[in-house]
Image 1: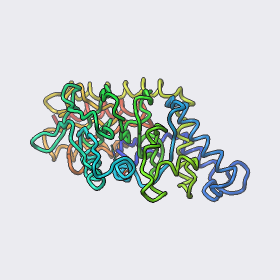
Image 2: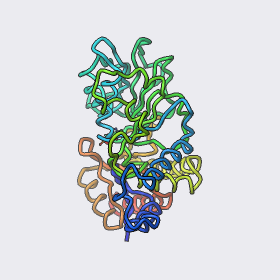
Image 3: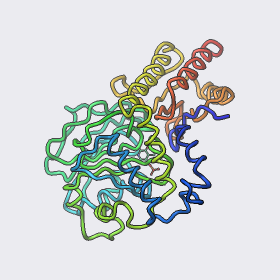
Length: 362
Ligand code: PMP
C-alpha cells in the first residue's frame, strides 16, 4: 500500500508515471531491454529525450527565443554554474534574498564576480517570513542579472507576483514551484529547477534559457560547464541520466493527460486553500509564521504549541499513513509539501487528521 507522501524533495511521483515505468521496465516498447540499457545515441532513447523536451515546451508555453536543457549536479551546481558563465570579477549581479537557497546562490557567485544584495527579508532570528515587495527592491540597472528564488522550500514563502527588474535579465531558481501553474516564460532570461519535486526523480536539473542571454556566456571556462555546449548538442554532449529523463517524460505526459498546468493550478490552489483554512481555524493551536500574501502553495509550514506536540503529530500522522511532515532540520515545526503528485483528496485526509488532533490534544 502506498502512503500519502508530503516529502519536500525527493517527493512523491504521480502513480501513473510509476506504473508506466513498471510496465516498461524489463522490455521498453518491444526492444527487449529497459530504457536504462539503451544507448543515449540510439533512436529509442532519443525519442524519449525529445518527447520530454517537447512536452515541457508545450506545458510551459516556452517561446522560440528560449531553449530547454537537461543538466546534472542539482540546483546547487547551478548556484555556481550561472555566475561561472555570466560573471567576471568586475561584473556584479543582484540577489533577492528570501531564504537559505538564495544565500547559497549568493555565496557561490562570490567566486566569480560581485554579488550584491538588492533586497532581503531576513529577520533577526535568521528566518524569512515573507518575500520582498516591489518598492523594497534596490536594483542596479547595470547588474549582469537579478537572481531570485520563486518558492522558498524551507520557509514556505512564494512570490505571487514576479518582480519588475527593468531591462536586466531575470534568473530564477524555480526548483520547488516549477509546473505548479502556467507562467510567462518570456519574463525570464534563465529558469532552473532540480527535478525532484515537481518534474521527476533526482539527477536532473531543468534549465530554460533565453538564447541571446546564453550567447553572452563565457568562452573562457571548460566546455562541460558552458550552457552553449548543452544547447548545441540537444543536452546530449555526454551521457545524460537517461532513466531520470525517461521518468520525467512519464510525469510530463501524465500532467498533459490530466489537463496541463491550468488544471494543476486549480488543484494546487484548492489544496493550499484547504490546508491554510485548517491552520487558520485553530489559531490557538496551529500557528503559520508566514505573512499571508507570501504563503506558499507548494510548502506549507506551521508550528504547534510545543516541539513535543509536533513530534507526536508527525508520529501519529505516520500511523495514519501520512509521511514527510517534519519541518526542515534548520527550521523545525511541520512542513507539508503539496507538489503536483499530492491530490486534493490527500490534503482533505490530512486536514481531517489535523482537526481531530486539535480535539484530542488541544
Ligand atoms: N533551490 C531550492 C529552492 C531547493 O528547494 C533546493 C533543494 N531542496 C535546492 C535549490 C537545492 O537542490 P539540489 O539538492 O538539487 O542541489
